[in-house]
Length: 162
Image (cartoon, rainbow, N blue to C red):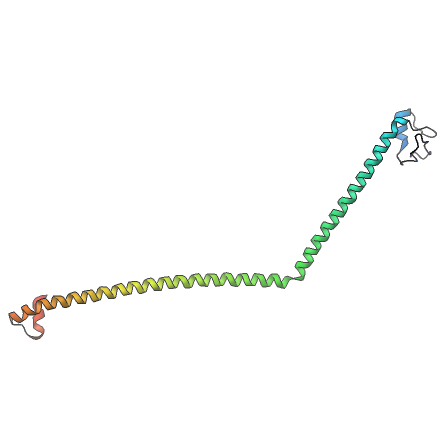
């Protein structure tokens, strides 16, 4: 940029395109900037404004591109999900079957436990009954010699044991 530029009369600086009407009104105290030179004190301010404008433009463009990429990624994900509904349905069905099988296995395990406990109880009862029969036979063996001694014969000898 040249050190001193004149306003082109359109209200904009020829170097950066800034509106000089408000700049010159502040600096020169005039409303019309035709033919008024831009004071050298405003040159750094003009270049800072230009840099800021360019930086803002680049930032906006970057944000637009990031938003566009994000939308494209989301669209791709939705398209893939829509393209594979059978796979999702299949996975859900498999999960449902696995849960049902697990429930059945738990039920079978509980039935087996119950059956094992019932078998154990029945075995204990049989043993008790066998022990009771054995005790009764031993008791009869002790009583038989007394019955013979007292003269009981046949089934009559049991009468005295009760």
